[in-house]
Length: 112
Picture (cartoon, rainbow, N blue to C red):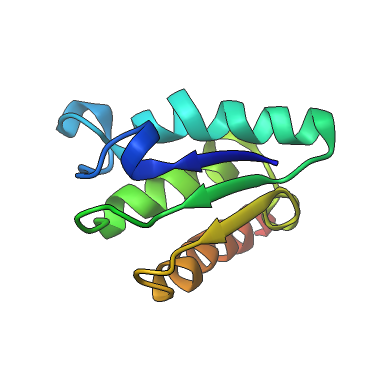
């Protein structure tokens, strides 16, 4: 299993939605780490583990753009993302539900 621990591999202070909004954006995280990790997981048949622990809070815009953006910007279905992603947060378990909600919402919009 490939893994991304956001606070170690990216930043412990995630930023806003878009790159134009400043450093450590959801868009930048998606494009630089998350998408390549998903593509690798799809090719190998393994899961990509994303660990949210250790961060100093996750802005809603960061999470929605990073994870919902996979559906909107790259056409990856919500079902496929749920198949290849393993999301964890011992510090704040509600983050996992929140991110899954963003993926599902983006998937519903994609279907219409």
